[in-house]
View 1 (cartoon, rainbow, N blue to C red):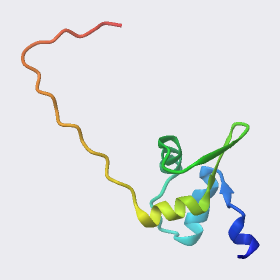
View 2 (view 1 turned 90 degrees about the horizontal axis):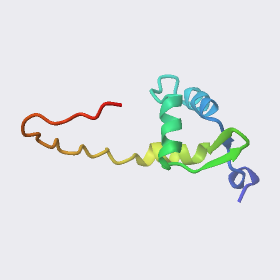
View 3 (view 1 turned 180 degrees about the vertical axis):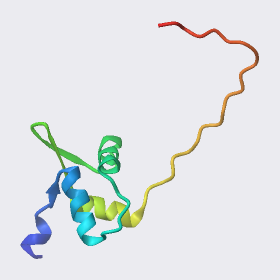
View 4 (view 1 turned 135 degrees about the vertical axis):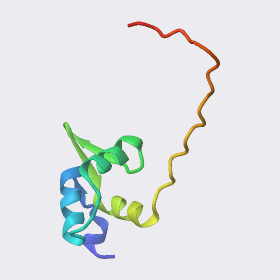
Length: 87
């Protein structure tokens, strides 16, 4: 196994998007999407102070495999007028 394969390529969300754009200039992946993947736990995060570091290889693997589409919850029918709490 090569040393480069064992070292995780930890990047911030911005740098991950920059790497993806270098690989695919027409990519639609945004920083917001990468941050949301980290927040939702789809990819592990290592915190270095206030900086969230994400393994680029994990993101690439996730992009290859895909994610499940979020299920829409059925709308609950409301019968009549309902009280709304005032804050």
